[in-house]
Length: 343
Image (cartoon, rainbow, N blue to C red; front, side, top):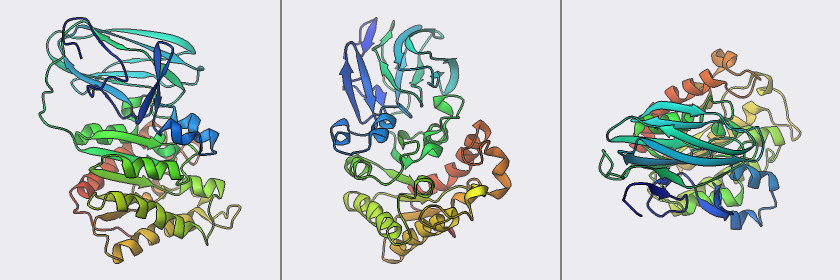
């Protein structure tokens, strides 16, 4: 990569500037982000999952630079797209809304050396042009690689309602702990698909967290007979490729109207939560000492129901509280000190 003034860094550049994406594919003079491998999605028989996988939740560019101006073009498929966040030295510098079509962002930056992050819109289909900087790239202020964290979940991990991409709960946790985030929050599509488990299993990771249950309840994708085995197989496939990696299983947060209401296969949300937790505890008893269980009701419980505007999804305050309550347990999980909590 060229280190002269007026730098141009494309999303498919191998320098490591762009983070949190599984693959980029060229689209004209721009690039399409993918959070699941596009070749495998061709045979996943789940078009909705492919659409969500093209959304850039957690995808970002991170540089240390003396540049005083940057330029980035984002092209959005429609108007339902989240903003672009630009952070300087860890603080939000500017938040830019998007609209359907081309959005050319020219951002003035403070003088001197600083860490700059551009968090792409977490929701909405986009393509991304090159990042152009008018200065030089410098070595990171903090030496060495950051711990790599993969988190998988539903819309509650995807965080459409967060005010910006740097304020989703995974982004807030990653920023607080200095972790290198790959967010596999797939709104409406967290059904433990084979493409998801293979992606996690084959990626490098220092911590994996799995938020399992709410989409399974909502779509009745597994019943009382099939859910335990599928949870065990999903965790087991990841563990086989990551034998020493701490792994956290997070059961569903509260959703009052669904707690005791049977779905199409006769399972309440409380049933799904207990099944997910009981399978994880059984795997612990069978010897998985690096598997940890976090009860979703300790993240957002009955007393926090007012933070769920539609009774299911947190609003901005709810996502901030989730981050606060998950930062400690996930940090302990990464250090392999967390004791399983009741599920």
